[in-house]
Image (tube, rainbow, N blue to C red; front, top):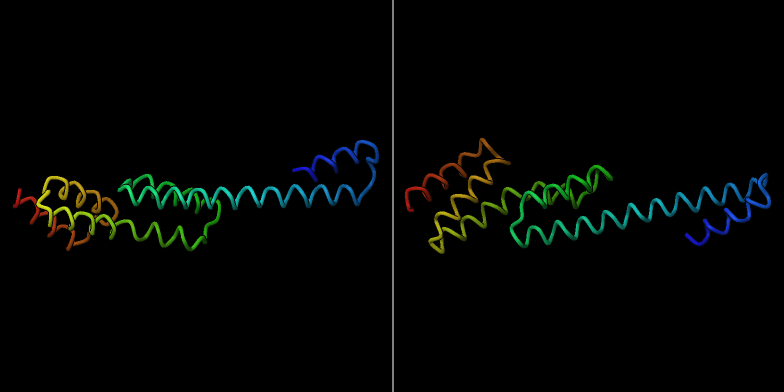
Length: 131
């Protein structure tokens, strides 16, 4: 940011200096890349926190935001893909704790991501019969 400011001041005095124009452009590009990288790092960190706190839809939204910035981001792709399995694992843990109502809600949430998953449907039916 400091370099950008300095090149802009230099161009005020030497407006036809091509080297200053080029350096300003490079500095602005670098700053933009750094801001993008920082945003991605922040979003991935927040998505991880969301998962740790069972905020599934928030995690998915953050992964989607990363993928809009960087469509091939492997961490976001893997993270987003893992959500349904993490929800099911959490629901399974709730069943083991005999928290059937909460487990049912989690299995239903997992079905939003995998609506045709037979195993999730079976687990949901079993949990519903336990409550």
